[in-house]
Length: 156
Image (cartoon, rainbow, N blue to C red; front, side, top):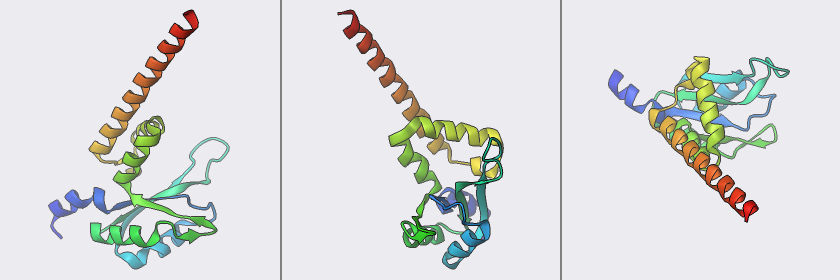
């Protein structure tokens, strides 16, 4: 496979898998997703400090060799029940953009924690990081405007 094609498609072939039951293991996750294509990497996230240290975080990332395989896995697995919970499966770049629209401060926090951790899971696309930052700034401006308005209302 041409290396440049792989690099261009990397963001589109990486899936976010969320709402994982804590009983689901890395091996079980790989087994669930391997029918859809060649898995080239998998990042199963664990709590690395605090009272939950060593326990699964409830989400993971899977990198397929092609974006077509990732899209097929997303179509077939999103909403599928696993240990009594519906899986949330999205392209990794989609996850940050979608959540950014509803909960940008969490996304910006997650993005900064991931990039600080130095793990491969922190490799979100540049455009996703920019979108998260823009949404965070917008929320901060709205909060500032609302608090100024409340103070003005209290004074009058």
